[in-house]
Every structure is written in C-alpha cells, then in structure tokens.
Image (tube, rainbow, N blue to C red):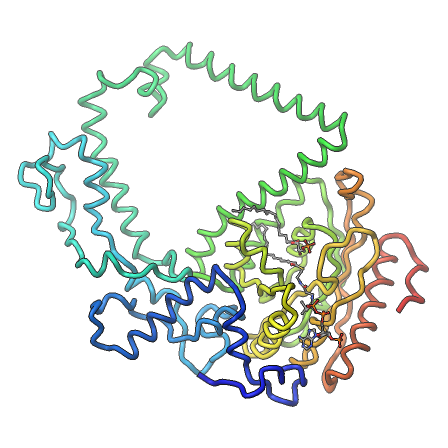
Length: 486
Ligand SMILES: CCCCC/C=C\C/C=C\CCCCCCCC(=O)SCCNC(=O)CCNC(=O)[C@H](O)C(C)(C)COP(=O)(O)OP(=O)(O)OC[C@H]1O[C@@H](n2cnc3c(N)ncnc32)[C@H](O)[C@@H]1OP(=O)(O)O
Ligand SMILES: CCCCCCCC/C=C\CCCCCCCC(=O)OC[C@@H](O)COP(=O)(O)O
C-alpha cells in the first residue's frame, strides 16, 4: 500500500499529484462500510499471508477482491472494479457468493417440517432426530463442514447474488416447505381453528361466507371513517396537514428504500452508481402523491464530455424529488454521513454510491473530497454537491462552502449549476405549510475550470453563487433582486 509523506498536500491543486492520506482516511469513521470492508480486508490479508490458515480454506470467500477497504469506502462507484486502485484488477462483487457461508438447507427444513413427520419415510437420510422426515426432493443436501458454518459474514456488496446462490436455494426451500404443508392441511383440517381455515386459500366460500363478508365490510367502513377523519383534520388544521404529509413522505422514503434495496442488490450486485437509475425511477413517482409539478429547462447542459461537478440549492428533504427529476446517469451525490444511519434510507443511499462526508471534521471531509477528485475522472462520474452544506428554505441562498469548487479545480472538470425555484409558496415548515405546487428547475451552462488553480477557487465560488442567486430570484418571481450581491 502506498503511503504519503505529507497528508495535507492534497490541497495543492491538480498539477501536484496528491498522495492519498491513508492514515487519516483510516481514522474516518464509517460504520456501515467499515464493518464489512474491514472483514473483507482482514480476509484478504489472511488469505495472502497465511495460505495454510488453521481455519481452513473456506474462511476467505473465493473471488474476494483484493482491495484496500478505505479505498472502496471513499468512492466505490464503479460496479466491477476497485474505484481507486484501478490497476489492481477487476472487481467482481458477485465473486463473494461462491464463498458465502452455506447453511445446510435441511437444517431450515427440519425445524419447519418437524410437525408433519408422520408421513415421511422412516429412514430419511438427513434426519438426525427420532422423528422421520418427508421424502427429500432432489439430491440429499450435504451438510457443510463446521468451518463453513462459522465463516465470516460476507461483505455488504455480497449480500445478495444476482444469479444462483442464495436465491436458488431459497426458491428450492420454499417449494419443499409448501409440499411439507400439504399433508398437514389435508390430514389435520379438522383440528385447525375455524377462522384459520377460512382465511387461507379462499376458504370463505365454503365456511360461513356471510359472516366473513360482514367482517370485511366492517373493516372497510372503519378504514373509510379513519380516512375521512384524517381528511377533515388536514382541512381544519395546517399543523395536522403538515405533519401527516411530511410523515407520509418519510414513510414513503423508508418503505420504498426497503423495497428498492433488494432490487438494487439483485440487479447490480452491490454498491454502484448504476443503482441510482433504479432509485431515480422510484423517487420520480413520489411527486404525484404530493401534487408537485416540475418544469425543467436546460437539461442539454448536462451533456458535457466526461465528469463534472453539479451544484444546486438545497431547500428541504423534498429536494430528493427534484434531484431525481433531472439526475443525469452516472452521477453520485455528496451527503452528510448521518444519512447512513437512517435505516433503509441509509442502505439505499449507500447502495446508490452516495459519498458520505463527516461535516464535523473539516480534515476528514476535505480528504474524502480530494479522493473523489482523483477517482471521478477515472470512473467517469458526475458528482452532485449542495454547496450551502445544509438545508435552507428561506427563498435565498446561504453562503457557499468551497468544497465543491476545490473538487472541480482539483479534477479540472466543469461546474454545472442547477437552480430550483423557491419552495416558500407551498412549503414552509415554520408555518406548517405543505401544499401542492410547481417547481421550476434550470440547468445552467457549464463553467469551465481548465487551467484554474486553488488560488482561483474563491472567484469560482463567487461567480457560481451570483449566477445561481440571480437565477433563483428569477425563477421564484423576484426578478431584479440578487444582481448586486457578492
Ligand atoms: C428508493 C427510495 C429512495 C428514497 C429516498 C432516499 C434516498 C435517495 C437516494 C439518494 C440521494 C441522496 C442525496 C443525498 C443528499 C444529501 C445532502 C446533504 O447531506 S448536504 C450536506 C453535506 N454536503 C456538504 O456539506 C457539501 C458542501 N460542503 C463543503 O463543500 C465543505 O466545504 C466541506 C468539504 C464539507 C468542508 O466543510 P467545513 O465546514 O468543514 O469547512 P469549510 O467549508 O469552512 O472549509 C474550510 C477550509 O478548507 C477549504 N476547503 C474545503 N474543501 C476543500 C478541499 N476539497 N480541498 C482543499 N481545501 C478545501 C476551504 O476553502 C476553507 O478554506 P478557506 O477558508 O481558506 O477558503
Ligand atoms: C433505524 C433508524 C431509523 C431512522 C429513521 C430514518 C429517518 C429518515 C427517513 C427518511 C427521510 C428521507 C430523506 C431522504 C434523503 C434526504 C437527504 C437530505 O436532504 O438530507 C438533509 C441534508 O442534506 C442536510 O441536513 P441538514 O439540513 O444539515 O440537517
């Protein structure tokens, strides 16, 4: 591993190739990826250094990429290769699954079918208890060695393979379970409680349908009454309206993230910017729930050759909808690292390749940004930064932080400003205002940074700020304002 002699030298601009400050990056806390990549790193080291490991060959999954864990943490945006050490060979997220711990699937089946053993053959080959088992379908599963059962958890990138592996086994297991249930249903129907039989498999027709229909009607009426009450409360109280609408947005984000994460894992195999396409498709439907409309101009300005830094104003958590409305392909966002802990939302942002920064540590944030500057060109990604650094729903811009502009100058890539009109007419948490509304979005022409150095960053920041502020006021119907600001 390459070690720098001067960990602060990354600030010196593009002409001075920056050594990666490995030590400081190691110190950067990043629990979700760290946990997994540490395991990975540990496994890689052990397999390299101790080929005759006492824990056996299964402790290191075959196909594990030989990648420094901090490197993958910084910008793991290219799906099949190590985003920093590009020379280190192809990165195959699916490779882990070959070595993933394999539970002998009869273990799962045994616990679930023990109740139905009367119909099984007396000498079921894999049964270790006194009770016989139902006949196995297909070849009898071979229990793995103890070391397999104790193999370390595979890294997050290997949670769910796109082909075979766990998916295949799960399907098989499911089929056997349903077969195992059949004799139970047929033979013990008389012992089942009445309600249970009725609820499953369309039993309501045969078993007192009118009472079942009455209950269903009751539930429907209750549901309708609750909805009506909520509607009335929302009409009468702006606070209730706000809480319910924003609460619904949270629930939507959490639920959709939870549902989308497995899809991302199955389709793309792990953390990759490609997942953003899937996330975008889902999030683009959210606006219909809230009566929001977007009027977008200037999308052609995204068509720059190669990577770029996109900067935009940040008004609310609702910005996710606006972001996904225009997000170009191959673009990741810079986000605060606290997002990682937001349950399923944290998972989906992680899978989408969001670059997490620690706002409480300037040094750490700057180092992550410097790392991104190096890798974004090689990986050909665009990086979306909110230069205000926090949400601001006042209808104006906060002063810009300079991280995005340092990044652009270091990578010598253009800055593309994107401006969203003010939300204040339809969204204001202080006034409990959240109604439907129209948002105007304008993608402005790219600002070149070729030949600029770190000395030019302040000017670049001011230039961008002024253009964006002027545009914000124009889009928000406050023309004439903001022209003289600096
Ligand atoms: C399927 C259903 C899904 C449901 C929906 C769920 C999810 C959607 C999925 C994905 C979307 C995710 C979107 C995530 C969006 C998240 C948004 C945010 O989190 S915004 C907050 C985080 N972002 C930022 O803060 C970026 C802006 N900040 C900066 O750029 C900062 O500069 C910084 C790099 C963070 C550092 O900030 P800090 O306050 O610590 O320092 P200063 O800015 O004051 O800088 C100090 C000093 O250093 C110089 N500097 C800054 N950066 C650099 C650099 N890279 N290199 C060199 N020098 C640097 C700076 O100029 C200052 O010096 P001086 O004063 O002399 O100029
Ligand atoms: C197990 C823990 C469960 C935690 C529950 C999770 C709660 C969060 C769930 C859904 C919220 C959806 C948010 C979508 C992403 C929003 C990104 C965003 O806009 O973050 C704000 C950040 O830019 C600036 O933060 P601050 O203004 O500085 O603050």
